[in-house]
Length: 312
Image 1 (cartoon, one colour):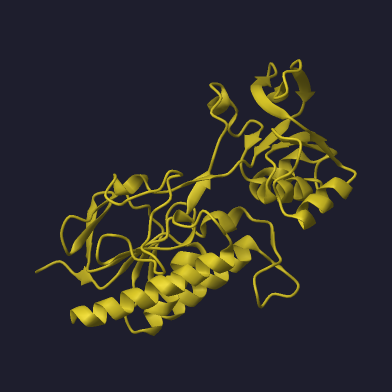
Image 2 (cartoon, one colour):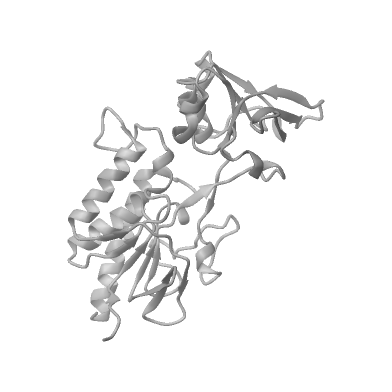
C-alpha cells in the first residue's frame, strides 16, 4: 500500500499557520498541520490583544489562538501537536520528518514563527525556572509583591513590564539606550506607571543567585562607561527580540541577514516551487497577528492556485 501524499502540509500554527489552514480547508483541500510544541506561537505569551479587528474589548492571546485553531479544525484541518524535525525539499513529493515518521506532501506552507532571544550569559541556563523567564503571561503570577526586572526597550518589553505591575511591587525596565524603541502609546503608558522604573543605558552583565539557587540580583553594566551597579530582583524577564525558527530547514531555503526566510517579491512563495512562507518566520518588519494572518491567507491562496495548475 503506497503512502498517502497530502496536497499540503502546514508547518507551524499561530495566526499565519491556522489562517492558511482555514483557507485551504475552505478550498476543499484541508491540510495536515503540525502545530509544534508551542501551539499558537508568540500569541500564547501575549497578554492582551487590543488591535486585532473584531474584538473591541480586546482578547487574550491564548483565547485568540484557540479561536483560530477551532476554526481551522471546523474546515477539516488535521492538527497534530508535534514538532517537525526536518524536511527534504530536494524532490517532490516533499518529505516532512517528525520523530520516526516521514510524511509526504505536494506542497508546504511554513509558518514556524520565531522564538524569544536570550541574553547569552554563561550562567543563564542555571536560572531558567528559577527567576529567569521570557514569558510574563506564564510566570508573572509567581512574583506577586516582589521586585523584578524586564530587559528590552521595544513594545514587547513595554507590554510585559506593564502587565507585570499587576503582580510585582516594582518593575525595573532595563534598556541599553536612553530612548525607548517601542510605540509612543506603549512608552507613555510605561512612563506613567508608578510601579515602573527605567534603568537607562544599562545591560545585564551577570545573573546572581542566592544560597537557594534562585535569582537574587542582577549586575548591570553601564553602556556609557560608568560603574557597574547591583539591582536586587527575584525575577528577570527577557524581551529583546526573536529568532526565526528555520533550523529544521537545514539551509535548504534562503534566509536574510537576520535569519528570516526570503520570499519572492509581492508573494509569499520561496525560491523552491511548491513551498510558501508566512508569518513571523518571514516578516521582520510588521510582526503583528493581523499581518501574520494576512500572509497566511496569501500563502493558502497561492498554494491552492498552484495545486490547481499542477492538476494535483
